[in-house]
Length: 466
Image (cartoon, rainbow, N blue to C red):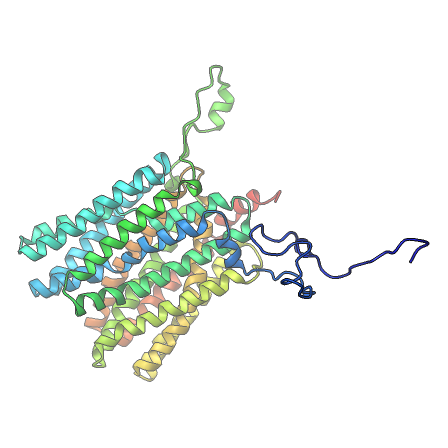
């Protein structure tokens, strides 16, 4: 009481304001929120949502994420479905492997060109026709196999699927556009996308094998085409979150010669960026890790008499990577991303020795599965930091092309690693084959250490005033 005035002070946390700022507009709290009609006020204050919940609360994020995940799931289905379909009808795994390898090579050539068109004309205008053309290629392959067409038609049909756009790269480009300037949120988004990649490549082969084995050999391809087209159309329909295409600047009627020489009229290709070339080489070495690990694990499981269990064992490695990616995105980052990239590659190199030791010392498939689960935990953090550096060093207006070049490096490395791992398994031993991914990871670590200064200088200059 002060004279004739009654003063009431409420020291409880406010419903709409608190130490962490205003509550999300979609929340239920407010200044007079008492937790229900007549109920007591919640004195603990509003609960802060987790990083991934805040990420997906971005306007339009959930819609394009659902469509993108539907379209990305078939990426792990098509190769397995093609192998099962071709080998089951033609009786030749060599032909099936050659067809999928040809498609991989065509993708390495066509994918950067598609990404450049996406940057120039926009995601929706390029991704939809490119996806439809790739779907027609998959259906043509199915018909050629079904009707007993000549072998060369299989190569041509599967090569047409190379026009499939880099949906993961386009999703990352949307996050970069929506979260421009928010490095912390972009770190969470990259971690989420990497976990999504691991989940798709973990569930895709399992789903394809189940469909082809339970129903008919073409079921995996048909389901993959349906998911790809549906997801791509849903993704492209979200125009509010689509980054604008790069447009050339209007010519200056009175150009300044000095200024014209210092500023290019169009963004240069990512391949001409000095800091990006070592990162693409590291992606090539990382792809060799993945490709050799898959082939060697299949050979080791086959030697133990459990070839059918190889998919489950490899799935555990992907599961470990997926879980580590989600955890890595939620933890607080410390130090420059260049330093974290080197440390992640070093951790990956060290953990990849566990499968080698498990195979050499025990020869047990369950022990190997546990070792792969642990070794996979370094994959996602390494890829997240690598993709972050690719985004940072890619010239403006060429983001899709830069990330597609990174994926192309991974695909090329997978092809080389598969060949090296298969040769080692056949001519030496499956146990010795696990030395191939360790060697590839060590090569990636050496490249990262040697080029650390090259990739570190641009990052320091770009973050000097942030």
